[in-house]
Structure formats: C-alpha cells, structure tokens
Image 1 (cartoon, rainbow, N blue to C red):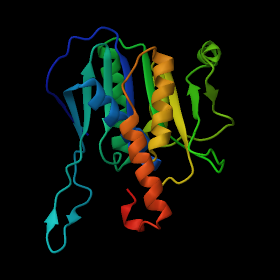
Image 2: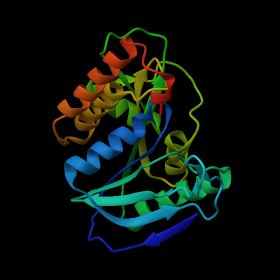
Image 3: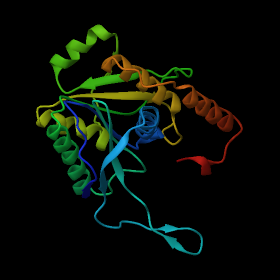
Amino acid sequence: MDFIQESEPNLKKPIVIAAMQDMGNVGGIVIDFLNKQLKTQRFRLAKPSNLTYVIDKGGYIGLPDENWEYRYTDDLIVFGGGIGQPPTNEELHSLCQDVIDVAKKYSSKFIYTLGGFHTNRKFNNSPKTFVTTTSFQLTNQLEKLNVYFTPQKSVITGFNGLILGYAKMNGIQGIGLYGELNDPEIPQYRAAISIIKTLEKLTYQKFGNTSELEVLANDIDEKTKNRWSPNFRQ
C-alpha cells in the first residue's frame, strides 16, 4: 500500500470510525453518510501499490481509481468507504496497521468499525444492529446502554473484522457494529440507518438526518418488487 499524507490536522484524542465496502455495502454507505453530513476534510490517502485489474469499458480499457480516504472533523477521524477492499492479504494487513498507526499518532482511545450481519431472520424493514467489542469488560460497560450484542460465536473476515483485532493487539478499545441484512448482494440502506442510530447512542453524538437513506431504501424495495434486473447489484 502507498500512503500519502496531505495535511496535518490538529486533533486531540479523536474517535476513529473506520469501515470499508462489505456485503450490502453497509460500511461504505455509513462512511459516505458521515462524511457528507459532517463535512469532513481529507488529510491522508491510501492507494494500492500495484494494478490488480483493469476495466473493460466496451472496446477500450480504463484504469481503476482505487483509493481510500482518511477524513476528519472536530475530534473525529473517518476512514474508508470507497469501492472494495485491498485485493491481497498483505495489503489488507498493511492498511489495518496504518489505521492503527494514525490512531496512535493522534492518541485515539476508541476505534469503531461497522458492516453487515447476514441473517435469515425476517425483520420487516427494522433490522437490528449487533455490537461486539475488544474486551469482556467493555461489553459489560455497554450493557447499560440497551444495545444488542452479537448472538453467537462467528468469524468476522475482511477489514471490518480485522481492524478490531489490530485494535486489541495495540491496546486500543474497539467496538464493531453490524447491521442485519437478508440479501448481501444489494445495497442495505436500512442496515446502515440502524448502525447510525446505534453509533449515535454509543458516542453521544448526532450525525444528521437519515431520511435520504430511507428514500433510497424504499427505492430498492420498489425495484426488487418489480423484479429488478440483477445488473443493479453492486
């Protein structure tokens, strides 16, 4: 991975929220929402070191514009969003370590990550967000906030799971928020809304009106009812 530092924000012990595109693009939707609502500013960029694919645009080739941004606002660093995740394990681990290094640089005490939680439960447009943390003690502290915890043992792969492991290994408290979804192949805006509401509860902050995401969720509902072509899937 290549990392480009564009500016040096003046931050004191910010919360870090870091997530990448995953099933249902839940992580990407929430990160993009936060950046838009909070009017964050980019200060660092992560890019793959090597080209791993090209895009056939129908008769000619285009190059992918793959990068992931570190952005900030008052006492908050937001990382990720964008398209996809690093294509190799080496780059994925390099990226996780860089997020940790940035968190340490600014003396961050908390890292939040988020993503989708695939389930067969029918939740009638009201998905739950399940929480897991980097320690039993932290989980006990959160119980008074009336949140749902992950219901059973499972393996969390990709950036949105590994970053919690990196936080734990580096003595940083971490919390993962995972929104329920039934179909991982389509954008899951209601899972994203559920995560945003839970994130507000845990951070004691307000991140803005989610009505635009609700409109997008309704639009997805209508298109799937009308047998929308699989070509829409992201």
